[in-house]
Structure formats: structure tokens, C-alpha cells
Image 1 (cartoon, helix red, strand yellow):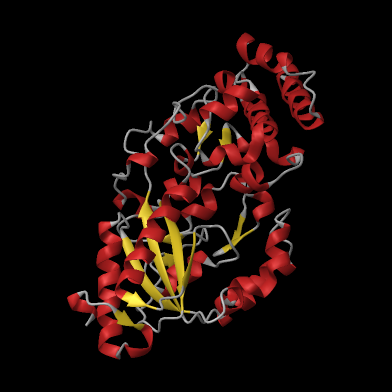
Image 2 (spheres, rainbow, N blue to C red; image 1 turned 90 degrees about the vertical axis):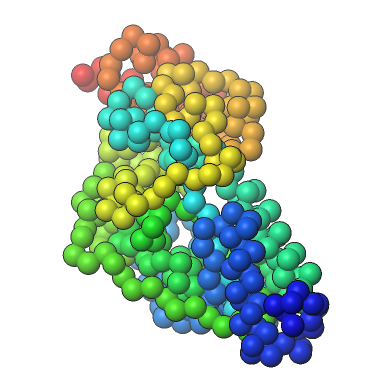
Length: 364
């Protein structure tokens, strides 16, 4: 029996064995640092229609891979043949010692970095934990077939996590949990094991629309619908070309991501700090000045952000984002001097945003 930790073969697992295995998986997940583990079926047919409508409206912007993968995202078995269940897991990330986010956002001379990115790259952390969870299942079940994902493939993470009972989709489109707000990462294990599924959670947003009203660029165009082309997180992370000029002033000092919709959510007040050391703040990214970060050389950028999710955008976009932040910053000699020092940067993308920033200060 699975409960006795005796090795079994997939073909011989009874419904009772599968139910016990599901309980074990949740216990193992907790031991590995996940704050929630649930199991969902692989039917995303309802979500598929919404996905196609979202893509049809062009809300994915430059994320061409979203359209390229098409319906595969909503059909787990098309991505991993034989998939009938998805083990979904969440891990809290809120850094305990980070400076108050609103204080940083309101201080125009400082750089706001989305709190999920101030520590170690979550892809690495979750991938290793999911692998360890899968290894435990493999040690108990012969023939266990699986594939683990952490924001690394065409996977509808929020939809699957909702079906697995880990929370509900908020109007800002992120998953919400009554005890953690939305300050957590998600990961999945696709498997052909017919485990019993968990009950999905009800929506607890009610008539609240604080996330929609707070969005600086009005990217949440309707409840549960996001136009990524206007989203600051998209613009500072996924968007590779010039940031639309009409949106630059709205970005403020948010140089990597934006947490406004999460910070204002009433459910966020129940979220506690993460106890995961890997998510602790590194390089002072919770309270650095725009001028300081803009002064980093490419070597410093690579060295300081080794092991960080931020490094993925590259040095050029890092400077692009900071130039926008400096253009929105209160005028000072140090701000203008920092921008002028990059006015002849080899990158046309950087030069364009530096020129815009300098023009903002001239106009003032």
C-alpha cells in the first residue's frame, strides 16, 4: 500500500491507493516548502475559448509565443501526451525585510522592483522543489510518468491552480488565496496518474474593483481581462522594443514589474512573509536609487544580478527602464548628469529613452 510506503506499480493502484497517494503528495509538498498543493483534471475547454478571444484581441502584445503555441496551452495532453491530472503547487515569496512598497513607489528618486524579483530567480527554486516532489512520487510508484513546469512552457497556470483548489482568479487575472493574497509562485507537474481531483474555490472578489482602479495605465480593461500591451509588468519585462511614449509617464519609477494591483487588494493583508531564504532581498533592490542602478556597468549588471530573474531582460532593457524612471524622477543635478552620461550610448533603444527623459526635465 502507498500509505505504508511500499513501492507499487501504476497499473495496480486502486482508487484507495490513489487517494492515499494524493494525501502523501500534499504532505510531501508541505515538507518541501510549498504552502499549498492541489490536484486538477486536464479539462481546460472553457478556458480555451477565453484564451482564443484574448489572443484575437491582440492583448498579448509582443509575446508572439502565446499565439504560436495556440491551443496547446489549454490542452495539457497536447503538451505532454497521456496527461490526465495536474499537480499544482504554490510557494509564498513576500520578502520579510523589504522596504514598504508604497514608500518606494512614492519616492520618485528610488527604483521600484516588483517584490517577486528582489531575491533569487523563482524558476530555479521552484523547479528544484518540484523535481524533488516528483522524485518522492517516483520512489513510491513504479512507472510514474510526469513532467514539471515553472512558467517554462505553454501552461495555463492560474486556470489549473484554480481547478486544483489553490485559489480563485482575481479581477487583476492573478490567482488569489484567502491566506496569501497573490504573493506566491505557481508550479505544475503533469502526470498520467488518475489521482482524485480537488474542488475548485469560489470567487471572493465580490463587487471590489480596487485592482482595476489603481492600475496606473488602466491595463485591466474589464474584470478578469488584462491588456498586456498597457501593463507595466509586460512593458518593463516582456516588451523588447521602445516603450510607447504615451505610457512612459504613467510608469513612474517602476523599473521591473508593478505590484500596484496586488498591494491594493484587500486579500493581501492576510499574506505573511516568506520563510524561504532564496527569496530574501539581494543587492538592496527593495530600496535602491534610480541613479545608483543606472550607473551600473554591463559587467556589474551581470555580476550583481547573477541568479536573479531580472538578468533575463538584459542590460539594454535594464537601462531603457531606468531611463524612463529617471525621466519621471524629481529634477536634480545627479539625475540629469546620470542621463547625460548615457546620451551617446551605443544602443539606439537606450539613446531614445534617455533623450525622452532629458526632454522631460527640460520641459519642467
